Length: 104
Image 1: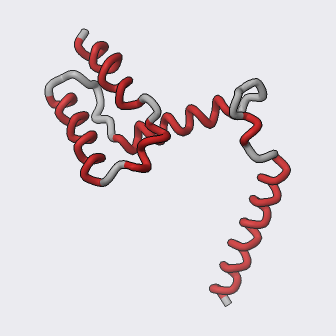
Image 2 (image 1 turned 180 degrees about the horizontal axis):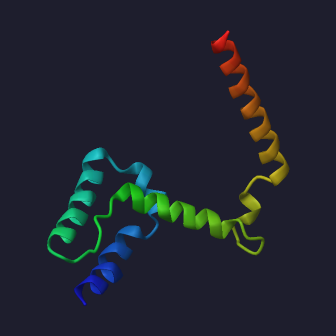
Image 3 (image 1 turned 60 degrees about the vertical axis):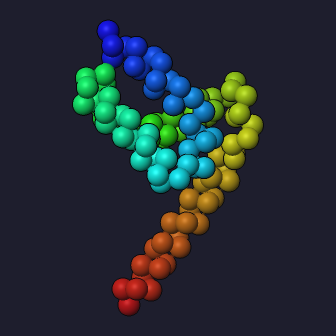
């Protein structure tokens, strides 16, 4: 019961808009958030030790996955697939070229 309350209130408050405010946190503030999650695990309020980095990464992935749908309001801000494919090919060519340069 307490786990549900912890996730519903505490984790949801911290996770709210974490994608926007996480990059402005100092290392000390990140350590404070992580210590809160460690204490919650120690006292049995959480099943797993959550870190701020994991929380931020999972919410970023979740937002990007949702924004990739055509009917999402942020979809028009994403680059087109053609540009992404060109960049990937260009990047992979540079990696291969730098590898050949180092190997010879």
